[in-house]
Image (cartoon, rainbow, N blue to C red; front, side, top):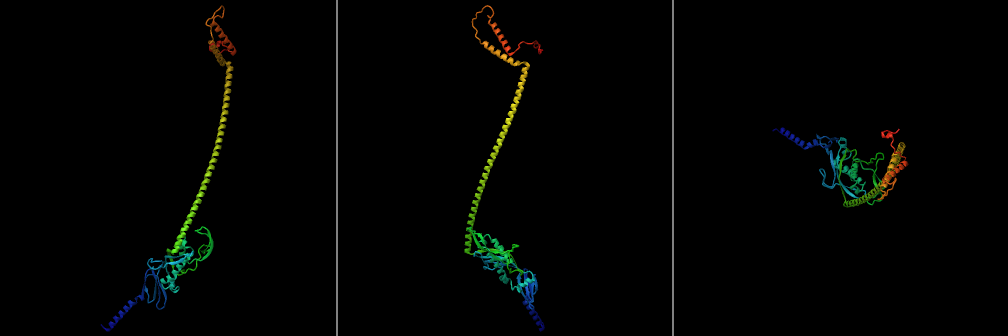
Length: 411
């Protein structure tokens, strides 16, 4: 092999070796889920590669960023990207109590070239970890501390736990609240007494009621915060004991209040039942009065109707009696009261006959000459005399007219 050929082969091998060694400075690959910021080797021109794929590096400087990261502020290892150390954030509540808060949040990075370049050229963040320590951590820490200053430890433990999470998320995304101190009288939850206290209150726009925000450090950087989550509130031991004591006392107060309200409600119920009973008694009495009045009116009506019926009966009886009397008068005028006379005649003659039959007759009678010696004859004579006397007194004519014998009326 000639010397020229050997030199050529050696030169090619050197070029290949250099190409292999320096290939990563010549071309570079942008992986999916990432973007790369390139500074040209000679001119220093900044450019951004947002789409995945291979492109020329040409010995330029490359900074690789993930398009989204998870920010951990936890007290232990909590997932990929976290570290095994306590990164929880300490806060102080408005009652002086201290707690450490653990949680996570999703951080999205710029999606356009200008905002991506500004991270380095304008804001001075060399990589994501630098941005996390200089921007994300202070922003989250300030939001948590600002929120804690708006409530007590016990409130964050109980009734305002959800408010704490919502207010912290809002301040991370939009900026810290502008606050003001307000003094007002409130009821102490334990003693029930009215006390004067000073509170930190969020300023709001009078027209819209929307909170007034201070400067937002992440605004205009193309950075977004989402899926903010507080995993735990780690209160100091003394604070936990204090919260437990306050909760116990509060429960006792609430129990006492509930019992008082229950007693009050029972008293109101008893009073209402008493009023209802009194109303029922009054109603029953009124109903009894109405019933008595109705019954009296009914009885009066019955009596009136009875009196009316009696009057009508009396008038009818009078009318019937008058009619009967008139009938009898007419009958008597027509036959001369013959039926009555005959009845009277029959009665008188019967009484006489009964009396005569009971007369005492002597066992021995001495007869003489002349009339009157025959007792039967004397009896007959006496009977005929009595008949004539009674008939004369009654005005009876006992003779039978000839017309009657033939079944016709006398003329």
